[in-house]
Each structure stands twice: as structure tokens, then as C-alpha cells.
Amino acid sequence: MFAKDASYFTGLAIGPFISIAAVPWPGSLPLLKPKPHLTALGWQVVVVSYADSHRQDLTFKLAGVGTVISVVSGPAQIALIDAAAQAGVRRFAPAEFEGQSALRPQSDALDRGKRTALERLRYYQARGMQYTSFVCGILYERFGPGGMNAARIGIRSGIGAEGDYLMAISHKRAQIPYTAGGQPATVCMTSAEDVGKFVAAAIGLPNWPTELRMRGDRMNISRLVHIAEIIRGASFEKAQYNTQSMQSELQLAQTSGEIQRQLRIISLIATANGRFDFQTPNLNTMVIAVAPKGFQTWLQEAWQGR
Image (cartoon, rainbow, N blue to C red; front, side, top):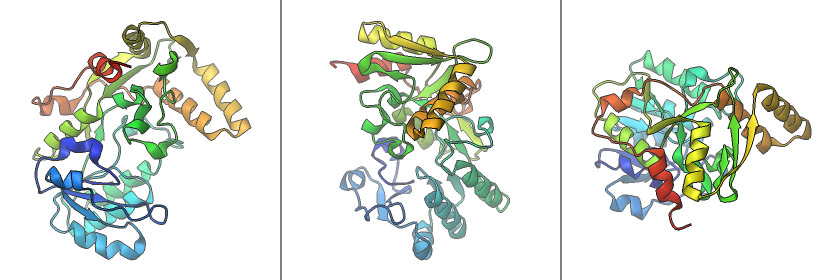
């Protein structure tokens, strides 16, 4: 696995044959140092650069690695894919960890280089390198105190703070997007810890399909908000959005140049369009030893004592 900080994926630490790298974004972060807490867990930690000038070094450090799980995106991930192919890596999982790629629009503001990464992987698949997209829906951590940012997940997404997606539980506010058919949108969800467990188990599968889907829970947004209200012991202020109102909100955000607001509305539109919902979690059935935590249980634990 290659990541800037893999501390939230400790479920992958199942043996010394998995390599972990602490890596910088080219030209934007100082070189990160190996993490002693990961070494103590039995991870092999190396420091690399994704810059073109260090491509040979990256390829060298990937020599002997059978599987790469990426949690970086953009140009850094493309460099990692190319180096993995050159090093003879057998399997590669890109930084997906959300909804199904087939449901994304051609022009996707939430893409962050993912389409390009999948195109590159299809190219190398024809040359013998397997790949899979791990699909987990929405991470529970979006709804924890501080949002995903507090768990050091999705910090660069621009919409990782508490309240950036569907619910601001601390402020008892919620947004409910409706489908074109007039029903509350439905999402699949998984905790980051359980994603780590599923991915670790998937490493042992003899072959990878191009998509491995997992989930800890599935429900419509009205039910999701109701669970949060029960746990917080108070009714939330709810804003309901249909197709027309979401498009109007997006146009206003574009006119005013508010990028973060645009991303929040685009996420609601994607939710209403079913991007984070799926019927058949094939990985759940392949690795039955992993018993994911339900959303209500996870949320209760996350907000206990707060």
C-alpha cells in the first residue's frame, strides 16, 4: 500500500509482505519521514517521491511487491501505476473507495484524476497486470465529529469537514436530496476500519474482478438522518432538495465562484443520481469472515459522550 499516511488503514497490516510508503505530492509537501507507529505494526515503510526525476527509484522500490493498494490520486497515482507496471507488480487497486465508476458523468468535478487512472490500468491489464476498484459507498467517517478530516481522510477533497456532506450533526442540520422519481436518495456506507479489513481479506483472493464492492449498511437519506436524530436526542433542521432546486443551487454557486459550495451541491446531485448506491456487494459474499459494523452502531460509538 502506498499512502501519505496510512494510519487509518491499519486493517491492512496483515504481514510484512505488504509495503507501505510515506510519500509527498511532487513539489507540494516536504519529504515525509517513515512512521514509527506503522513500523511497530509490522509494516515495511519506505519513503519515495512521485516526481518524474525519481521514477527509476520508485520502480526500484516496487520490485518484488505483488500488490499495490493506492490511496493517492492525480499525477502521483499515474506515476505509481506506471512504476508498478514497470516493476512487474501483479495487482493494483487505485484510490477509488467510493461509488461505482460506471455511474460517474463524463465531466465529473469530483473525479480528481480517477478516470485517467482507470484508463491507464485498463491499458496495463491487457499486458498482464490485474486491477480492481474497491467500491465502499460513503465512509461513515463523514458523519463523525469533525468529519473525514478529523480521521485524516479526504483532506484534499475540499469537502471532508463535518457538514460538507448531508449532515452537520454538531449543529443538528441535514440535507436530503431526492431522486428524479421523488424518493429520498439511497446510499451504501462502510466504516474506514471495515474497508481496511475487506481490502486486507481481498489480497488473499486468487483473482480480482475489475470491481469489488463492499458495504456496512444501506439506507435512504431520510432514515440516515433519523438515526442521527435518535442518537443526538433532538430533531434536525432539514433542507430538502429535488432535481430542479439542486441545479438552481449549483448555478448560484457557479455564478458566485464558490468552489466548495459547488462541490457540496455536486455531491448531493451525485447522491440523488444513485452514484453511491449498489445492490450487489460482491466482496461481502467473497470474504464472509469480515462482519462490517452497521451505521447506527458506528454512529452511536462515534458520538458517545459528546
